[in-house]
Length: 217
Image 1 (cartoon, helix red, strand yellow):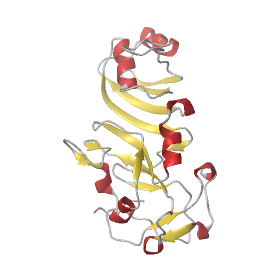
Image 2 (image 1 turned 180 degrees about the horizontal axis):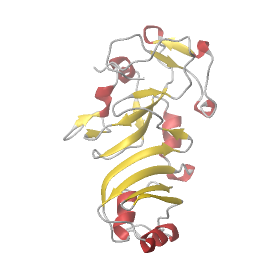
Image 3 (image 1 turned 135 degrees about the vertical axis):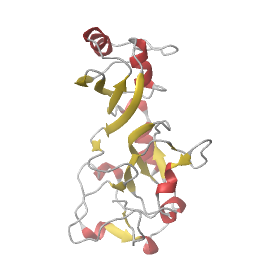
């Protein structure tokens, strides 16, 4: 897990289809200095507020500044994006097939967010979100697959699809406004205990392996 100190980094090479079952085989890992150009790695990041998911950010710092140069030069890319003011789970890899699988709306990955709202989420608003709301310019309604009220103005919502600003627009469509948004899950991938700015690999790290630490450029 990232902690901001220099360390010997580890990565692994395995087909993305195997990631559903965490790896515990020490031979699946290799150190960066032995990394082959085609070594594939899969990472989860707790994106902090104020970072852009771009190698060439326009107005804010890049999420790639949170990773060591060795990962960047080996083709690390975001699998999907979050707005600069949205926090939480981002998946990254240098495996184009894996990235396409995560990004493509037709693949059907459900995504879970915690939304803080400007107003209490009424029962009527909840019913509309669960039934589906129409968004301007979109052919199909957007529906909350699951909706859980955490506080009167904080809701956990699960959606599918890749519509631009989907969650924010859904709450706006029922007369509310998102003031803060945090993603906690993509399909079976969960953020876990990562703190803002921390990252880790999408495999279980054997107990005998040294701690994986973040090494900003």
